[in-house]
Length: 87
Image (cartoon, rainbow, N blue to C red):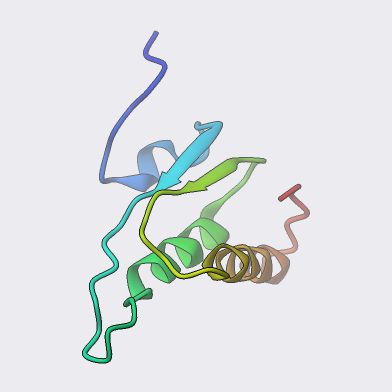
């Protein structure tokens, strides 16, 4: 049994996993701030598709407070779907 799997296709494993890493690029914008578009896209995807409790780890270079925003995005998507998951 494999304990760790790496894949670009989140559909395969999101609801089988106990822990998921968000590890996406955060390139600099012209003003020097981080482009968080990819981080937020993943958060939206998780919120739209998650069916079970899950530990989410962010492994991207992000500003302070980004984790709170990611949690908010996921929670809002879960609420829209009437999912009451512990997060």
